[in-house]
Image 1 (tube, rainbow, N blue to C red):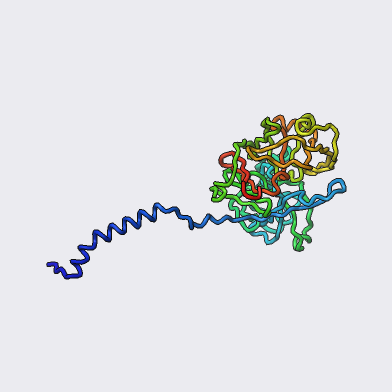
Image 2: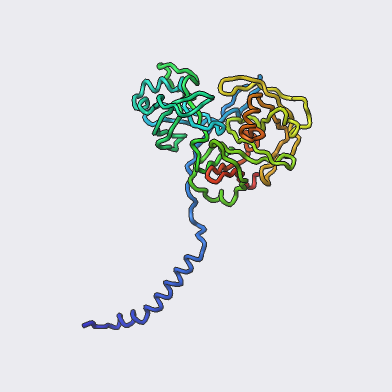
Length: 339
């Protein structure tokens, strides 16, 4: 037998009103946008600019390096951030003393199955290696072993405090990811999905992805041309074959000459003032006091094979954030009050 009290009678009568209030509160909670929801935290990877002299002139932003460390090897390294390189690699000359000193590292090296090419040479690789860029961990990666390349370090130098340059961070590391390059704040981020406010504030253009490298449509005087974006070409806004200089400059007389190196080989290139209007999508790029450079003759065949007009470096974007969407083959420029 159930005995009803005054309290239970009151509760019975109030129950429909309680349910109604609960339903209204639930509806309001769902309808109101969650403005206070915290954005996803981004694990930033800090980078440094490296300066050096070329042709008796000092360039403070000649290359980008990133702190690099290998799990099980208690030493600090740096690697160059170079999206013109298809693969991430360590240099054989530089890593060899560490291979000899750390057996676990040696066991991960496979030089029998040389399935990758670097500069026309078949090379081996470290397999399932864990490493960090700055403080961000990358697990079970394949890193090429570029033997007979890089600075030679003696066994005695292993224990010095000097941070040693031992490799290159190439495009292979970022496939199927979103890569943010925040030039003003000297940092990059690698994301699985694009977060706010980047979704709303980025102007993207459809690009091409070939051998892992991004090729960006650049509008020059109203005509579109594809350029490979290369963070390893830091000081050059654009470099093209000599026959294409006239599309960017109204002079045939070079006003600048630099002696540069590519993978250990030195050669001269010549600069011409840019007089053309240049844009990526709807965003016009600043060209005042910038030069287009002719390329080494060997590069011309590379441009033909890759179906590009040339290479685009970092110079246009030093005051910007850009996003390379390797998932959807897009190149984006973050638009804010400073751009």
